[in-house]
Image (tube, rainbow, N blue to C red; front, side, top):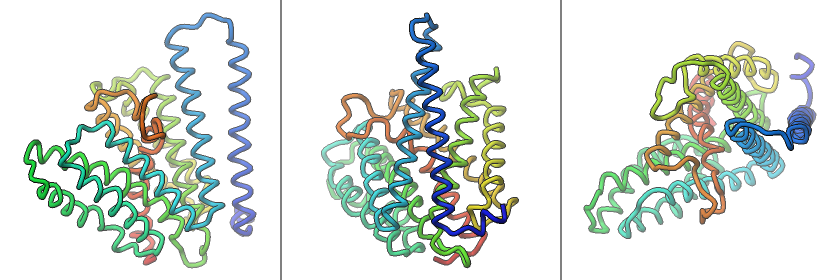
Length: 328
């Protein structure tokens, strides 16, 4: 591990991508061979549904890995623009499923074309103190003011709450991803990409283990009307797996092994709870997945892929800044 930490940043990144894409290729090859073996055999509807879900999740992992690679290749500026586009598509997908009125158009214009680009501009220029409060303070106050000027009091609180919630999740939460790329520690300059990789890996591993455990263990669901697969046992196993993977990946971070374990647990806990909240929102909207085949966003189900990251990224970012007293 000491030798790995002493490697040059470019060599560490190359090693990470070799491991990441190598593992994905092996899993994809195994899935392909499994599909050939199972083709022609009669399977239960549940097995078919699980297989489709696995293929969809594997595709999501491939897309996420390619996005991370593109973010690293394009540098901090390119990564900030890339995440800005993802926020735009995710917010549009969110708003598409929410019932809005003509009077909301001004608020939506403010959200899409003022708050969103301004948020990412502050990230790109490393104005982290202002970026941390722009949306939860100024955006929170500006949205209802603009809505009130439209002179439509019908379901005023509900309409504004939906827009504010969408901005917080799709813009504010996701914008902490590129912010991690620009976060510099003393003696760790220029390696912010590893923090983002660390976050994505531990949160992803935690989610996968939790999902597998929920299907394998017969545990009583904690919130049956929102998710029949969310149980304390499965959640605990996912949290433990994320923490262990974080400790094993400490060499790519400025943390010690114990610190990496705790940070991974915090990120995974925030991500899993975020996923549960997004499931509750989908239940309320009466949909199974964010987006659908006729979605005009062009990003079908994007929120299903990034929901946990939208919750985990801000908690992880501010935990790191607070504990290690990183100013910029």
